[in-house]
Image (cartoon, rainbow, N blue to C red; front, top):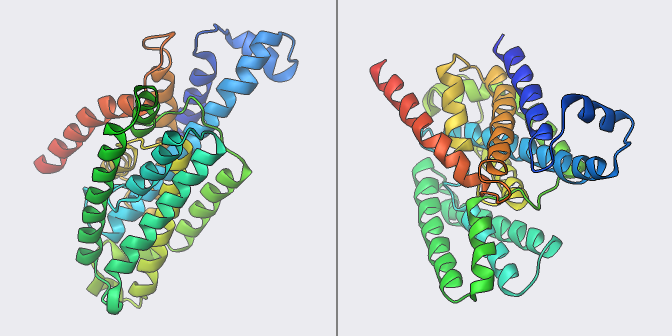
Length: 319
């Protein structure tokens, strides 16, 4: 039932995104352009701006929500989100360095991905030193590395020219205005879902504790490695698409658990649908609230996410 409702929500949010913007489109005009492509302006707006941006929002939201589910199981921490291990910090340093050098487009995307991978390897290398892998060591290492990246980001911002600062700030707050996704991004999302469903029973057991998981025959060490690198790649890919969009990976899993989706066979597909829909709606609001100006989508997700998380927290405590 929940899955069906989320499919409907995804379709409705997608329709809202395609109809919203500075160029007005009615439902009949939208359908005509999808099938006949008669009006040149409407065709350009739809196929070159709105459809790519809507797909980018869905894929980014889905990846972040799925990564949030995995991180919360891996770290056994309800406050864990995709950025807690410093991945976004590494990506930000890479992207901001490219902007500072006057590079853009593909160069900035590649720099962000390289920075994210570098951060992944640093955290894993320190946390797994001498083979002493532990959740506490991983979490502490991630927090320290994240703080270090934050310092580097502040240096880049304070030493940049005024022309570059706005571009940097938009990227840091999350921005889908220049985003697009390819077949590889969609395949990564589908592969992540398929892999998550394969290990969903192990995730259900691990969420109850390591001792329980070991007692039931789960290879915890192997599963931890798989979860860490999978969630890291999902996060790194999402960050390269849209920058640092907050609250999706933190709020969406909690919201679904509150609605009863605790089994990861249900939680994972639901998280992709709700995360994608949430970011599509947030992006639609970001480009229409103060049109013709646009807000960074990360600002809108924070405005929605903060009160949502407080409500979830209060309900959890009262239970």
